[in-house]
Each structure stands twice: as C-alpha cells, then as structure tokens.
Length: 294
Image (cartoon, rainbow, N blue to C red; front, side, top):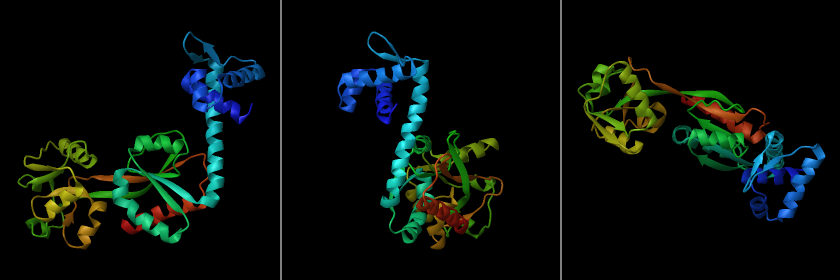
C-alpha cells in the first residue's frame, strides 16, 4: 500500500462517498474505487459497508483510518521539517492572554538571535490550538491552561501573580499590601463577564462569602488600566500586564494578603516530535524571559 492509496482512503473515509472523494481529489471515481479495491484485495479485508447512499467504515476500515492518519501526518511533518531546514519558519500558537503578557518581549529577542527565521502566529483558544499542535500545524504553543491532550507535553515556565492596583494619588498608594476588607468601600473596576481574571476573582471572593457592591465594567484591559491611573477606582490585575505602568509610576500595585490568586504559563510541545534547533531556541528564550520577569 502506498501513500497515494492511504490518501485516497482517508478522503473516502472523510466523505463517506467515493464520488465526493473523487471530486475533492480531482481524480476519477473509477481511480478512487480501484485504490480501495486494491487495498482490500492486498489485505483480504473489507474497508467499507456499502449502504444505500453512503459508506460506513468496517472494523478493518477503522483500524486503517487510525494508522493511515498517523502515517500521513508523520509524512507531512517529515516534509515540513526537511523544508524547514532551509525555509526556517516557526509557527507559534498562543492564547490572547499569553500573547498580551509575554509574546512581544520574547519575539523581539528571538528576531535578534535568529534573524533568518520567519515567524507565524496563531492566536486562539487553547482547546483549538491543542488540536493544531497535535496535527503538526504548529511548532510550539504558549498557554495559561494545562490541557490533557495525550500526544502533548505541558511544561510550566512562568508563575504570574495578581495584584491590587490603584492610582499613585489614591490613599492606598502608600500601602505595601491590602486585604479583602479594603475593597468594601471602594469603587472596583472589573472586566466583562466571561473574562478569565474576573472569573478567578469572583471564585476567590465567593469562597470567602464576599460580594463587590460598587463596581464598573470595562471590556478592554487598556481602558481599565487608564481608568485606574486616573483614580476612578481600584482593580485586580495580572502583574505581567502592568510592567510598563509600574516602571512609569502610573500605577501602584501591591498583593492582597488574604486573596491569593496566580496562574501558570505553559510551553506545549508534541511528545513524539523532534524540535528543530530554531524551535528549541524559542523555547530557551521563553524560559530565559520568565526568569527575568519573575
């Protein structure tokens, strides 16, 4: 059985129809039928049950689907890796949070160290990027969510803490720490419902039986930070997202002693894939950057 046989089989299995598979592959239906017949004769199996309007995989067909999918994906990875030795392109996946907190600094340093490597980015939900990484469409991924995909390995590389923030003109600007009780009479600025930071804050407050009574909602992190800087209220935010504001003394930040909140960022890779040298260089920079930022 050749790669061509497997490719045709996979298309038929995806369509459950030989005519549709032939159209998708730009070949004749008789060519598709012949390829399937040749596989069945070679291994003395039946790959499909022929129903009235579509095909259904048999037990043998399901077994071949598993192996053929892995073989074709591995073949594509091999081609990509060999071409990558010359093209030198790294495709990085990242959640929006990881991109906002980390990616800019890492990529700036990466382009200095690896100027001949072009970079592509996919910014998306962690769940969808895990699929892309597992299928070989990404080289590496950064996320704050540890998944459970069996073919991926999740390596923690950075702890991010959450801090209470206020304007340097706010009375709390002289404080080195706050407690939850300090929030009760303050206007609290929140992100929109569904935001991961807001959800973590509400879970932590709920465990202690506390509800914020006075709050405004912001749908943009920059707008929220600007409002706090203008002394319109206080908030809680990731320390990674306020580095510039702290260095420019536009915000004051301190921990909330009785409200521990943190998250972990992960580098995600394929278990069974050997990373190219310039991908390993990106991973090294991630770890080096984390050491500098913590």
